[in-house]
Image (tube, rainbow, N blue to C red; front, side, top):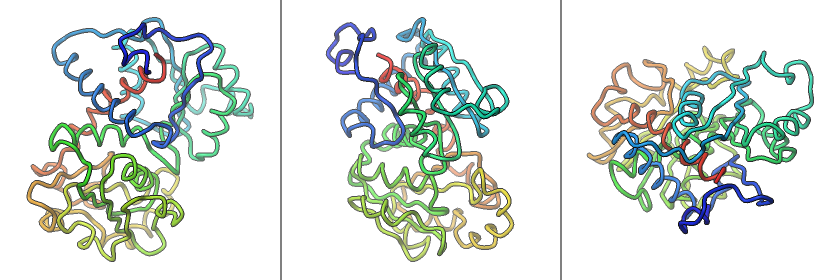
Length: 314
């Protein structure tokens, strides 16, 4: 990417070391800031009707072992807008469903496309895929991390409030993949993170320990007090559907609603990666509250993922 940033020919360099995006830690803080700035520029160009086909003739394969709306549409539309194309492989569309080793699929697709986007339950599977692929691999969500979502969240905050460095972010809910990626983001962007989860649903203590300013709060109110940004996620993520009824009872005190946001700063923003279950992790009307920016946040998936594709392929 240094070649593009220096104004040199952005075409792919033969023999260059490929880059993967499996977690936010695969980029430096400076690279992440560049991605957000470039996403904002791509958004401006699209609004102005200007074409920026930096990926003309490029192709990506997208493997979705789990359902996807925002991630899939953003990558597929983004590749088209940048002049490339995307091939979508669902659970029944590849030989992975018939027992082909993930390493073999990685090697085959590396001979045919310029990058692979993969969503699967186990993070270890994405790591194995990337280790065998000779083209960039992007984590489109696993049970452990959701880094693409964080790019959109950071773009949205920057557009509306400026730099998030030094601000306070509250994550309320399940200490799962979104929470884990916020822990990584706190280190990369330099913000304070307070996490409120029910007992037994807190994030990995080893991951929490890697954060510069990450603390586990005693309650949602403690986490949200004077926060600049409040974030939540569904109580039953993909793979936890059979636990939904039990989780609803455990997580009910952790619902984010209008009353809880009153304890945050007056200019607080609320984000949710969506889809949301109104009446569960959020009150029925919170998504439409003026403090909610979930629609802009969702739309920014397009622009950040375009910037990410450029970064990895040029």
